[in-house]
Image (tube, rainbow, N blue to C red; front, side):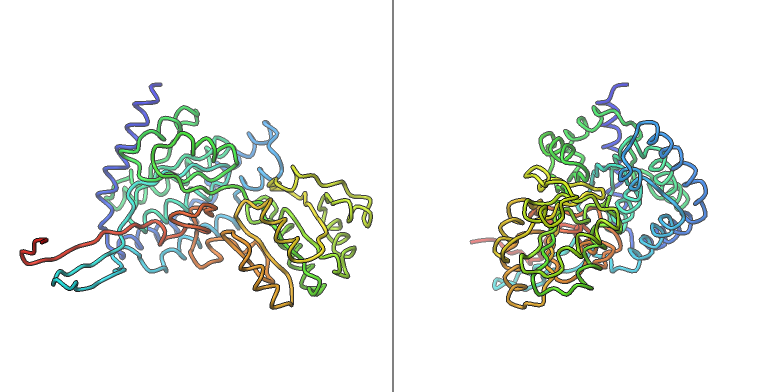
Length: 416
């Protein structure tokens, strides 16, 4: 296989399609997406059947339990995907929105509007729902997309992309508005990352290795959706019931995702330290404690510098005791990946201090870190959660898949 020609063909087809869909009406786009949501439900059994092939292969290759969880599609998750599509339909279309409209002092009329970015390539691992999240967000915002999922989800991704393409064909729209890369050779990704004349932006979401590879090879702008080393600080004034509920939800509800808790910091004067650690163990959390907490709870293992900086995506959790909020902030700023940080407290001054001295995409107060999600933020879905600072930070949703064009209307004006 000549990968260079293969990738050039993919990129050109997406590039041509972007010009054909950028001016579709909101009604047309919404109609297509509603048909897609219905079709996903109709073909639920077929989707689960294809997903079973990926799960079986995952067992053979000894994928971790957290990886298998991200890979799994069942009735509930498929219904969730259809709901996300309908949620996106209900959102206002950002294309054409006027961000500035003025008459300049020289009489020129200036209007700046939101327009599609063009062609987005998204490279992702394991979670097949990303195929629909990204393609529907791109379509609603008038963008073409190139989807490069991981080989572990190839059967699931193929059927989801093919369902969308069938809907486009049925409605006499270009199928290549959604291009799925069905070849899993790594050389394909490397070749695509060189085609900045056709691809406007690339979004990698996955492990640290993927982010580094894409960042080093890409000739087009990269919006990084990096690892989630999520930190939560339990202040001395936090009450027991809320703390237990929030910490457990942050860690246990779905430990395989990027907004799950990785480091728990506990104030030295918090009176329920042992209750909290015991409750975590009851929920099968494997604890790694600093030397102080290890004396209190000697059954656990010792935490290390390397573990504090690690995204586990499983039921492992590091815990450390801090003397005050300043130590907590110092710890977070040292080990954070810029994803999500949380404080549980009833002290308003500490809330203000935490919010002002932490620099991350999400800063949460008295609520679960699991809320850092495009759907939970009212975005319908997300391309991912950006941990960088340019273009978008946090959940990348519909409005973030746009750029602007300025239109200047004159009557023979010349500059003097």
